[in-house]
Length: 224
Image (tube, rainbow, N blue to C red):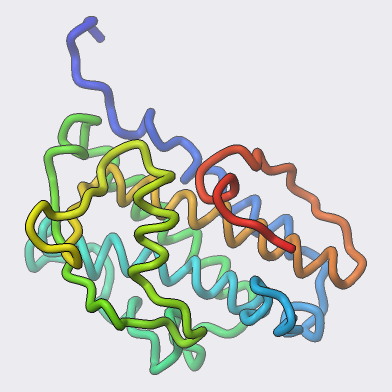
C-alpha cells in the first residue's frame, strides 16, 4: 500500500471482531436468575444482563440495516428486516424470537459480522463522506424518562471528536456520518459490557474482561 492509498476501514474498527467473544466470556456460567435480575435502584440497572445483551444485538441491526441499509445496499439488504423488529420491546431484539442467551449472543456476533462486511467495502474517507441527518423532537423521551436530546447534547456532542454535529439553523436537527455510526455502535458495545460487569459485581461476581475506561462512553458515563 502506497503512502497515499486510502486506509481500509477494517483497520479503523478492529474491535468488531473481538467484542462478541468478550460478551460471551462475561456472561459464561451465569444462571437464568442471575441474568434476569434487575437493579432498579441504580441508574444502570433498569435492564437485566439478558436485556443488555439483547439491546446491543439490536443496536447493530438497527444502525446497519434499518438506518443505513438502503443507503448501503439499496433494496437488497444482506439480512431480513425482521431482525430489527423489536416485537414491541424497548430497543431490544424481539423477546419472542430472541430469549435464550445463546441466541442473543449469536445475534450480536452476526451483527458484528455485518459491520465487518460493510467495513470491507469502505475506506476511512468514504466513511466520512456518507452522511445522514435526524430531526429529534425536543420532548422525545426514552421509557426511563430521560430526554434523548439531553443525551446528544451532554454526551454525544462532547465525547465524539468528529462526525456528529448540530445543524446551523435548526437546534433539533443533527448530522452524522458513517464513521461516527461505527464509532458510536462500538462505544455502545463497551458501555453495555461495563453495565453487565456492574450487574455481576452487585451480585458478588468478578468481571472477567478488563476494559479501558478512558475510551469513548466509558470515559463519559458513571456506574455508581
